[in-house]
Image (tube, rainbow, N blue to C red):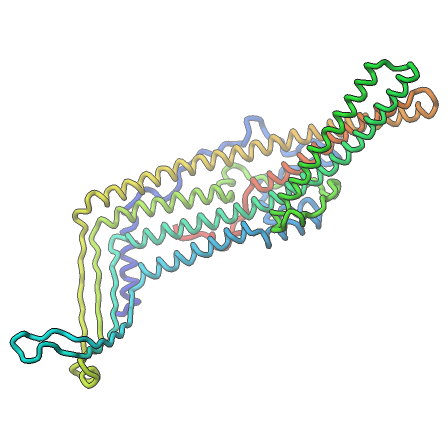
Length: 486
């Protein structure tokens, strides 16, 4: 029987026995809710800035979802991060190492081992005391091929290999989660940098308007038309407005530094903030129903792979308590000199079989079996928790995105009203019907309203990115995680 036939036959017997050991490999069924949130979710979100976002139910997730913001500069930043991020490269290297480890383990456990050995030796050996010569110097030449194969009748090795394959699949899914999280972090950092830059600009104008009003109030006080309390109040407002700038500038720099590191750059090479207006709110976002989410979120699929891996580990621990048969054979030549080594008399060979049945290991085998059973139960509970957390993540993001629309609409309304008040104040001031300090106060209100509007628009953009990411990946987007045999 050839080595290949032996391997196939042994693997067939092992696979037949795999189903008899270990807990169920399928993850537990988690009831999928009809909807994510306690409140019914409308498929059309509130209209704000002329855009009413739509939720496309049952639409597949988008692999390159960041392109929906319609910014070539943003696309370039994300692609740069995916190509140059050291953390992503490290995760990719770890995944490659895990795949090679799997190939190594399969090669050692599934196929026979064949080794070639050559051992020429020269040694001095003791002779028999009654003979005249007390020692002998001799040469020994041995060259042989050795082969061995362990028949895995109860599937211990196959289950261990399958468990490792699932662990590698879990790592591949975690790598996909890392990759998507990196893209999301770059998008959110870009949005935050753009928002903070506009806030810094608006607060700078606000501080300038407050300082101007303080100077006008001081001048009025000198003329007797304003009290000292008015002067002090105006000075306090100007100081408070100016005091918010350092913290905002520091926050902007911190976000830009973090963005640079995400891109694989040093902090001093951080890109310039984009204009917030260059990022368009996506009009349509794909949303999967809860039952579909179970099959496309990388974190859920990774938890499912962990359940299958621990089930196979528990099965392998049980199967290792049953007998195993190892066949071995060797063929070669040997002799005390080259003439004997090359002659028919130098042929050496051997065949053997070893049947091993574990009897007593101090309770180690039973403890190992209980260990993997407990690990399996923990993986099942972790799977349930991961599913519930995913549902919560989507529900929270949907709720935030809907309320972002309301907030943005109201802040836009407030900004428009404050700008109208400023225009009226400036017109009245030109006609002499309103003093300059009132115009400066109206400008302060405009800048305050602008800051709130910028924050609301940035929140809507960031929550849109979070919802894209929360939907997971399209089927088959990770090559290695194409479906393995169940």
